[in-house]
Image (tube, rainbow, N blue to C red; front, side):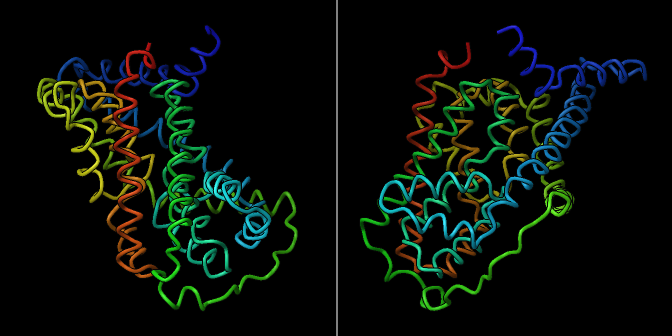
Length: 334
């Protein structure tokens, strides 16, 4: 456990970086114990830490993703049926881009190619909610048990949601242009290792430019929560004394638009101020899976009844997971 704690605290959590920033700010005459000094330290530390993790993770995941272009993913998914197909689709979602809006074009392509609707929805749910980046980032903040259980619950929501949509035969509620589009993908040529490295580099730079403003926003909000909002306020709204905290956090998260990198610092600050673990994770799931921009995009591909079913399944799953995590909080965080 000593080696793992070192990896979690110093490698993933980069506590050494926090100490260096604190000493640097103190050397400049800033009191890091004050609200202003603490906010600046929190902001610099989280921005640098998340940026480093962001670039490393996106590069690695993009390299892996180069082996799973859309046409290959379609062939893989086409080999399976039933619950197995939903599970494979959910797992494929873990190596796709991070935000919900990025997943919708792939969802449309998979549906147009004739894959079962439930299978494509399993992908659509898991892609923003669960990815390799979220696993590593959650490990750096909440520990390995919380991270692994979070990912497992996310996959469970994706598989159950896709299976339910499949059993309800919701194909009539997909817009006609999606069903009639057909597959236009062609076979991708084999990529060399250099091609894959260049692809990973381009994906890293492109995603960084897109995501970095949300990192700054998320860390800024986290710094304000961490150093300026009284602890009793957060505990009153999102703590154990409010049985509706999970529901409230889920509802608040839906209109927001961010990915896992933007929500982590907010979640970290909320937990530090007394919010319950499950409530914080429900907020993160809602922001990444049910963002308003992604729902607007999805509405162009599906009819209101199917959209409402998708929202209902995700919301119910997120709330249930939130309450389960709250019940297990003291066991998971020791």
